[in-house]
Length: 414
Ligand code: XIL
Image (cartoon, rainbow, N blue to C red; front, side):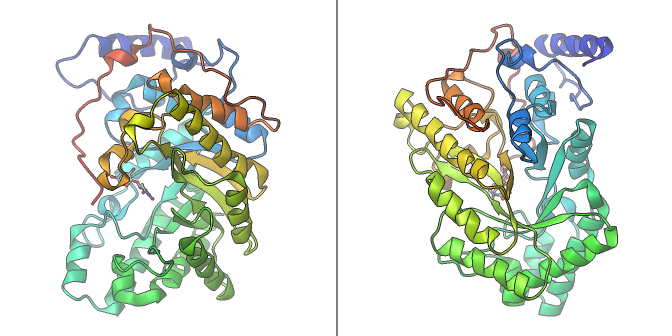
């Protein structure tokens, strides 16, 4: 229960935000305990909470990505929902554990951004999926310059090992898992030529990364799970086949790999069927790994489809996706890639061609079927996912007066 003191503090914070401050308001960094139904009406309407439902069904969590530190921390509604562990049982930092932030200069590590997320998670009893250690995107300039200047294989290996070792040892068991390698495949299931580690080290970068991670995990003596995370591997095709081969090669070499992240960035009307997802999960599980749906979102790629029929389709798609995880024991958890359109990355990436989005929790309730569908999917006996309407939020919510603070963090996608 939130204490009286916290409620008073929260009320003062709301008043302060509503007063349209001339200077930026103090970030609402948790612990910040506000009754969540002030925003969502969940309790008032007897509606179930996403993480409660997932955990009752035996999953580890229903979680979300969050791009903090950032303007979200001044959005009381956002932070209140993020903090509420009945709604989200895990957080994935959307950006601040990536190379450009964690090793901005060679061998000079910065943990500030990641610490913010981990602290919030720990204050509220949530898991953290730490993300990520080796990727072709969001790398620091010093690294890309070294590659452009022909860095040696030996140096690149030691740079990769050093990064992985430092991050894993720094956060230790505060991470439930690490995405050791992220999105390393090309469209035909081979290694992506844009990956700088592959460019210099060749295919060996993959086992080298996992080996370094395993060694660091052993040193921490914590039970940290190691994942390969990717998109387009969720339902057959060459990328899925490539990922299966990659996992098999690690297993055959006796190198630790505990799970595969199904990113699950899907499109309305183009989401794989439950059966296809289940089949692909089982193909990985046959290699003795867990599955997590790590970045679920289902976007509209055609604005004109964002109408009642489109939202019903979107709800069906969320239902299909989450049902797959519900049907497979070793699909242990699911995470959405943020829950408020204001903060979704899909609008920042032109190639995603996203014209109307996939809100899960807050924002315009035009999108509420997505959430209704999720809450109906999670119980073991789903009833009528598409007919259930989500109640509209109270008009007294401060959300309307909380304009998004202009981000100083600009576009992070390269
Ligand atoms: C995205 C972040 O959400 C954006 O803020 C950033 O600009 C680019 O990266 N797959 C991943 C995530 O594994 O790390 C990406 O996150 C989204 C796609």
